[in-house]
Image (cartoon, rainbow, N blue to C red; front, side):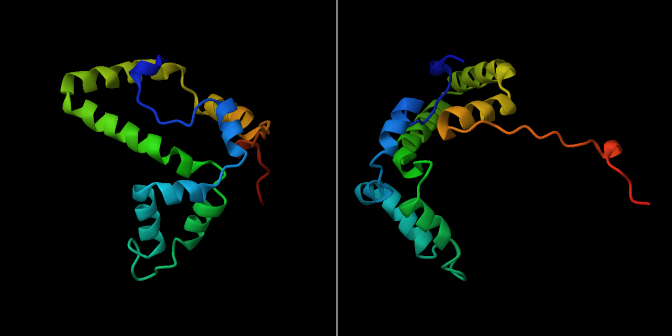
Length: 142
């Protein structure tokens, strides 16, 4: 699919992500982006679950101290992508054209292929194929 047909947020290529992982500190992004900080502080402070303010403690700790997928690093580009989507949506003709082009290009999309590629290129692991038997192939309890 041609890049100009879709709106994406991204940290960059696999190589760029690998380079950025070394020395990545999610708290740096938390501290320097007031919008991100406010969102995380609201989650941590129980804003979204006042009856159980500790409900999202593990998620916040994961984001601030173990952000394996560099979500906080991608936050700013995600917000920018959302702003582009909002602007594009105002132009009904351009929005419809982009939707149609994306639908037409989705034929080559395969979740299995995408997950396999992501596993290899991002996580650095080889997929493990397990064939599950069909229901008629499993022994029946008698």
